[in-house]
Amino acid sequence: MNTEYDLISKQARRRETVRRTVVYTLLSVWGIVVLFPFYWMVLSSIKSFASYNSEHIPRFIASDPTFENYRNAFVQVNLSRYLVNTLIYTLITTALMLVVITLSAYAFARLKFRGRDLLFTLFLALMMIPNELVIITNFVTITDMGLRNTFTGLILPSVTSVFYIYLLKENFAQVPEDLYYAAKVDGTPDLRYLWKVMIPICRPTMITIVILKVIECWNAYVWPRLITDNADYYLVSNGIQEIRENGFGRENIPAMMAAVVVISVPLVVLFLIFHKKIMEGVARGGTKG
Image (cartoon, rainbow, N blue to C red; front, side, top):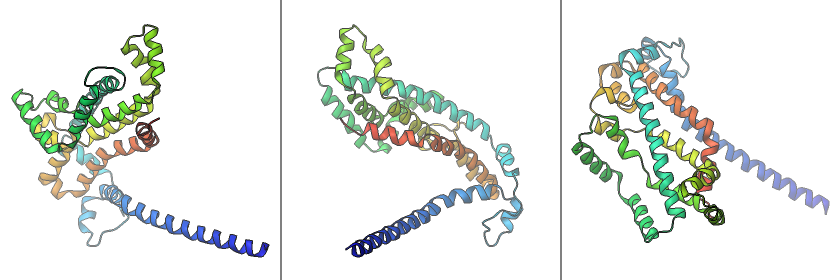
């Protein structure tokens, strides 16, 4: 009996070992496929211009690594200005959006007013509208207001998000209403209750929203490209496009890759530091009860 049990146990362990080996092998292959473009980008950025052009067969290791391409990336185009503009745009947009969505989510989650559910349903219906149509409407509005080539024109259409309001509203709704009624009995104003109770409890979701918004702003391309044609207001996305279109980017690929690395590193570092909080916030926001 024991011999039969041991045989079944060994077969089960063997199957589990095979399964794990196959899974980890597939994950490793997929990881290499996903990470290879980043590796190639960094590798190309540290190759000299002459070395890169002399390679008839691409080499996967730089024989004479150099950081001269990074200096060229800042000298040939105003990359530092684009980084500063993007930082200003990202910080202001994220701060304003956080205020707007927090007040909106709190109103839908806690305040009682006529037509609240219908209004929220119509609000969610906005998510069904293609972004292209919204961009066209925003472009006409901003142009009519004379806000093209201004930070105000860049920022205004991005200070709210239906998805983030929904995510935060669902998180607020998980906080027991008894806390709200007890606070109202004590005479606590809604804004004070929001600041002292709701925000601390829902901090993980709010941190997630902030991180996702920062990534969204940093990667913004279509709207900044459409609303600005003045280099003084270019973001890094415009800068990369300028590098690609002018002779510098087409001729000096290593320097262009260096510029892309400089722009990409902040987001990669941000995600690596806060990826657990992102997953935690999304999970909390999508869980009821």
